[in-house]
Image (cartoon, rainbow, N blue to C red; front, side, top):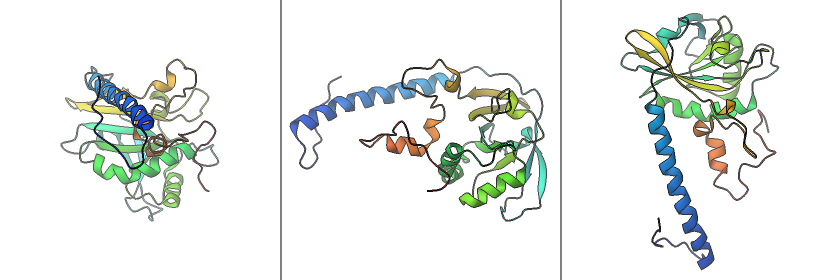
Length: 232
């Protein structure tokens, strides 16, 4: 596909415009591929029914409330009229000294977007630490909108690859659907478990992570030796 050279920016050279047009063609191809992958994802047959109606611990909507904790079942996470549930597994287990900086960076961005996403789907964040500890971290980050659940007393993490066999916490995004009164799995970000390719890491949750997508627009890129921290 050859594109007409219709866009020009101040001071650019002919060499720049030629290279930019080549890049534009690659960007168009990537957009087509992204849409094609999304179409394949939407066409997935339903996965298995959840093995149990997991019981999570959840604090009050007001993060300042440090005493209220209630039990909420997975089937209760579906609000009326919304039959899709997105669950992010947050790497913050009871044996970890601090929350995962990478997950925290991603959730920093998601906290602002989730109020929009919830117009279409239910969204929750699950971590293995006790509810009070998760909420303390949320207060330190200034999170206001994320629905935070503790899986300390259930096997959700182990069942849906948010936890390794040795108990190490793993990042994962799973999507569930409610059909005929049953909760069934639909999708998981499995790139983390795909065969490794040279120069590539899992990048399985990158599409919902603003940080890396923003840095990919820069000449320095995301780099290979820098990662977000909890404090700077």
